[in-house]
Image (cartoon, rainbow, N blue to C red; front, top):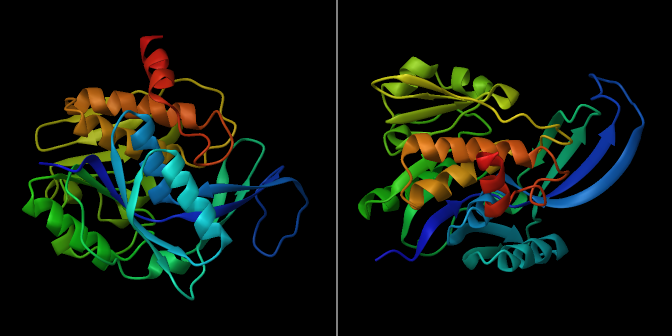
Amino acid sequence: MTDVDVVVVGSLNLDLVVRSQRIPGAGETISGSEYAEYAGGKGLNQAVAAARSGASVAFVGNVGDDEAGERLRSIVRAEGIDDARLHTIDGMATGRALITVDDHGENSIVIVPGANGAPLHGDLPRGRVFLAQLETTVAGVRRAFEHARSIGATTVLNPAPAVDLPGELLGLCDVVVPNEHEVDLLGGRTALSGRVEHVVVTLGSAGADHVNDTRTAHIEAFPVTPVDTTGAGDAFCGALAGRIAAGDEMDAALRFAAAAGALATTQPGAVPSQPRLAEVQRLLSA
């Protein structure tokens, strides 16, 4: 018996976002036009995306004992996500992301892990799909995926930011979702597809490629006018996990994920931009 559809093991950050005409180069100072603070972190973004796609979701992660941690926990609860395994770490700050967004919607991001870098505590829930990223510790992701394998759950890894992954962790992955830069850092599509059942390479406005042992399929992007691309990849991953948990075939789940990712670029912020089920269904039907 599963507790939830999707268990997300990941990070929570307070995103500090500045908009400017362009992203500055090394050593350059430029003027920004707007500043805002949003809830974010790949884990939180993806958990919200999964929940808004119709999945029941539990979150496993850490926040600091500060106002930002309280704020992020309140958002987890407001989205109907189980926060029983979201721990507050005494004496540590909640994670932060410093984000610059240019007038074309492209971004550059610096992450300060804070409590996200602390070990995971306590037991792990039961779920149909376990989804993780790499803004927390690799050891924590491995522990979660070992647990997932022991209960027969599907494991989905978004290897971002890309690091040198131990073979033991890749061996615990059913689906790996890197972007076009991360896949090269992980050894390339051919190397990954030889070790993982499904490799899904996200390509931004060019869509995505699905690589497995038998074929390579391209998932077309949905045409939208982007405002802010922050969180679009997370929308894709969270929606994909939600639809896999719902029992969709991979092709259908990927098309749903592509629609969710496209819609996420049409709104500012990471968590606020995650689309709801009805919105994705309207875009798919259109």
